[in-house]
Image (tube, rainbow, N blue to C red; front, top):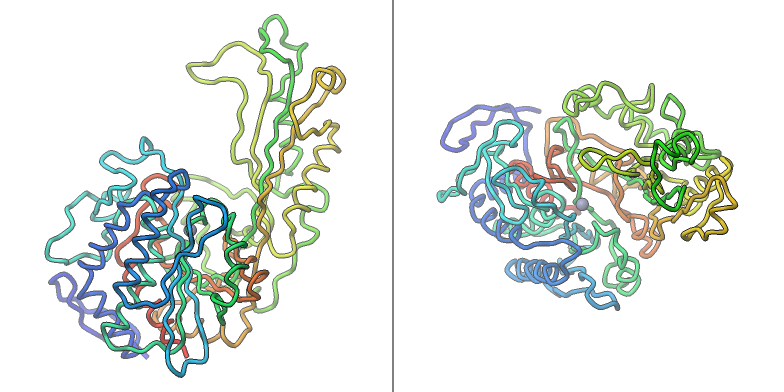
Length: 511
Ligand SMILES: [Zn+2]
């Protein structure tokens, strides 16, 4: 049922058609409208704290800041969950016991961010100096001061590392709880909060921390607040993630660089050998030709297939936005493609180009392969399939620098270093009763379709929650899709952060 509600936004009276909202939603929305200034003041201070893996002291400051945020909100049992290794960024934990509540939701986000290269950020931006813009920079947004009167527009953006990924998750969750307390709304379930500090580094100590605190972290469902909303601008719920693992390849040729005139045609060229090897891994339709690559994929259930068909197509929009004319896997949409394992060349290097270019035959060529995995794949097995393929192409595969003897003996020599830290995929069933309730809550917040994604393209270590805690997980993002996460010019749209607060608040009322 729709009704017309008049809203005052930044002093301008506008009429807008929005769905009949629950009283709780209206209360939470009003809270965000009245407190945008103070919410963003605290949020900016959070964004000033560098949070990259190379800076353990900075990470500790972020953890301390979150503890302070929790303390200010009256959250209980606040503590750092440390790994046994020194200098590992801790997880930050807190909880709220609700008398009479029978169920527990645990809210997850991460406070660490991707490494930064300040030189790549747009003029006027620095990764750890949050700046306010009237829109996205590539949509002609301009820098303005943070307004003293606390009045913000939904399309304004804050630029800073982790503004979206994933301090936005922490901001949405902790301000949602703040809103409940200040508006006298009692959560419908027990709440737990778990903010990780090593997600962007692949969560190397998450397993250890979960194992050590099994009882403390017991819950009925983990709500993962990370990643962007759907590219169409619609809210989405994601039921699984792809897994990920890597392989470093180095093809060897002559021990020293050779003059391309004196030796060209005669000396083997490692760049060509590597290019040939890599091109043998995919056909013209973008399908991986490595034996058995797709064999162990668990098929989607009927509910998952139906959801996938209803995911709005963003293919044409994204092609336009990204400046590309076609997709790699012919005949498959973006959504269909990310439900399959992938093989991606992350980077490739041999010899010099540009100003340093010279007429030489390089000594080696190297590439990093990124394998994304779906349910059914095992990361070690997937690595092995690639190694078997390389061997089938006549390469002598080593896991160390070749000796002189080996260089003289083998025509095709390659060092393959499989990543030691793979992550398997995870998928939660859409048919579980608790999941159906959560879907209904998210749907109640919008008149728009809520996109149900069986799998997101990216990777989170969600299988660990299942494996270590026997827990279910569901991912509910808040950040805008064009937030540039992991890259330069990362940003959060104010409207997304505020909507996220409302949505997390309604989830905390779950009973
Ligand atoms: Zn993230």
